[in-house]
Image (tube, rainbow, N blue to C red):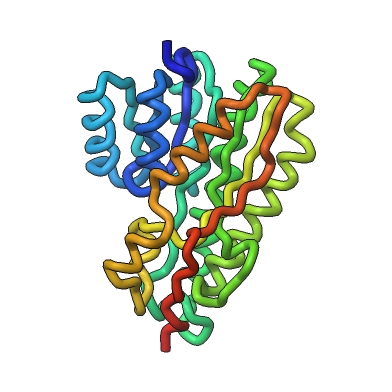
Length: 252
């Protein structure tokens, strides 16, 4: 018997990086995993990998910032799967290179980062809230960023603002959602070898990418958090590489 047999897990941003690693872990442990994201071909690749290993994955192509799409998808999933036990809010994006710098930041670009990273997190939680409340239990894992813990300025104003908002949202959940049996864990990854870290104008070298955190580090973290007895709750985890790696400088 696997640890998460009978559990239903929704994971956003599941096509690559941390989301993909978490999805493969939960599926390997017996959960039915719903892969959510905007790029269907990436989600299908993950579903194929999970299927070859004997796991169960469902692909749902959606934009977490589109509330109507999220609600329609959630309704369909609850009708077919009857429940949702774990929601991993992992979807996120940032602007490429110098577009994120204050002097180059366009209003519509700022709005888009807030829409996807912050409003998307809200949309997904509210879609999962009713079934979790009915069940009397659930776990929400918010993948945030150390941009909301120790801002460097490299991430840019829009990303920083969204991540601070996500932190505030997650803290509010930890203070309120427990009344309904819902636990919340806010995870703050430092530099991680994913697609988003390479969107900078000054990217990491291949050598440095092997020294920073890897997506599977967060799969292990999610397993730990989700495997605790419902009476125990880890509300916050900040994760850094063991070896300090010089960060690429502010783009100029």
